[in-house]
Length: 140
Image (tube, rainbow, N blue to C red; front, top):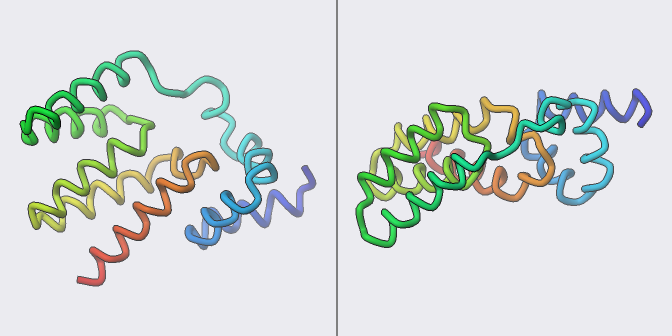
């Protein structure tokens, strides 16, 4: 990949989140190639673990049982430990939003965008949904 393209994509990451995420979707192959250069730690094995999978399953059980407080507790622990799964951030933000705990919802969404994971092209759809949610919450 040429330096000019990498610079353009890097500038999008730093300056226009929505444009970057849309381009990840619309130019997936090019953006994956660029991401491998720009965010090498993700592609060198920093992916989900069995522990995260077990915690997600526990959250789904709590959700099914209607024990939302326990679900939120596990989700927040996952976020605090640097979880790479967008669902975790989106789900807890949705719960806070539904509870009218707007600041907590915004804080969780901001945490997602403070990680490196939102920049990974295969997470662009989830990241766009979270960006939409964050912008709506900020406009209230």
